[in-house]
Amino acid sequence: MTLTPAGACHLLCLQLTGQAALQFLAGLPELPFLARGETCPAAAELMGQLAAETDDTPHSRARSQLAFALLCELSGADSAAPALPPLVQEAMEDIRANYAGLYGVEELSERLGVSKSHLVRMFTAALGIPPGRYLTKVRVEAAMRLLLHREYTLDVIASLCGFSGANYLCRVFKKETGHSPAQWRAMAGQSLRPGLSPEESQREQELYI
Image 1 (cartoon, helix red, strand yellow):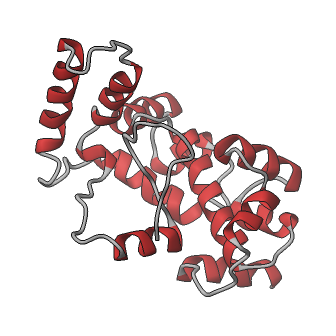
Image 2 (spheres, one colour):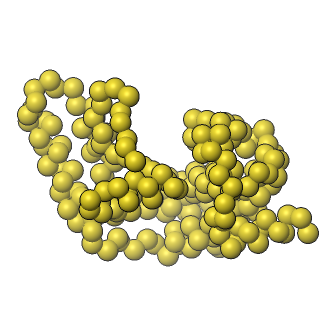
């Protein structure tokens, strides 16, 4: 598998998912260094600053300082990731397990026994995004898996993923991915193969009961 840029570019970060990731990793002589985002939370910001650096001097002082700061940030990324606050960890687990039925952050905070403002403050401080945004991302990820592994209509996928309807699913999906669900499914090749989690398979059956 060969990745070739369409034009001149500086590659700072690359994210591959699904079969593309497996095929790409299989072609590398050595496994790359992988780290979860919370292990080195400042890395993305530093990479963005490097990308925005416009000094034409190949070895500018500003660019060197940013590169050094980035290396320092990544140097400890192979150590154990700092433990998330129990409330945040519990919220993440609840969202992952119940995203299809959650009505929003208000219900989530009630289930966890805390105020909405406290939950939003703790969650955002730990992960960099509010719980509502995290919930949306989890739902979109679930929709992507169903689009890839099933030939369901958008109404069915919306029901399984917690969206109010196909139209809302399409709006959110395009905002998150840049493509409509139909476009994404076509790009993914409509590969229909087993790949859902046991929980998703159970939720899939419950829809028809």
